[in-house]
Image 1 (spheres, rainbow, N blue to C red):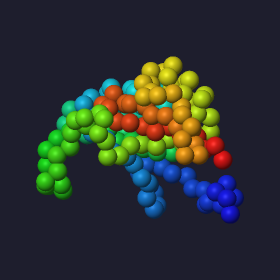
Image 2: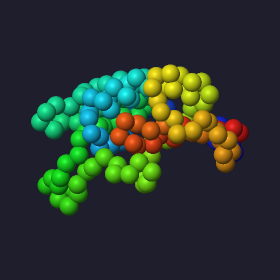
Image 3: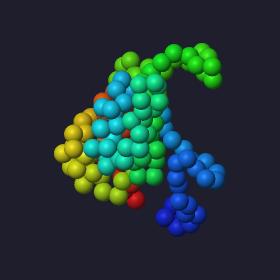
Image 4: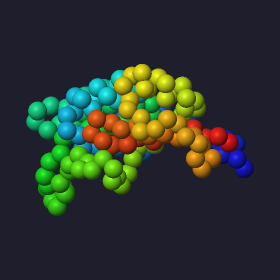
Length: 148
């Protein structure tokens, strides 16, 4: 059975969830407003909150995903040995956001016009076309389109 033929139950996701769960991505950023503005401008995200000076995080809805952005900091009672920092080296990463699109060339052109800094133009690789964007803190975001 092909991927397109698989029927998946559709649900309406909301934050916070009324039932079940919703997955969000948390990233440590140097400046909440700068990051919120980037994800709003480039991807058409909806800024739900910009956090506050007391340490509250910012929240952005991007399509069917929620992104939490907050400045780094030291250990807290619920993570007593963990310190959060922005990436120290933009060329050594351990994870990235992946955005699947229907038309990569249209997204490349639009998002570039909105200020996205692409590492390369879209390239055919492993049965898909893909490229990567860097956000203001150096996180990479893969943009891919299936070719099958």
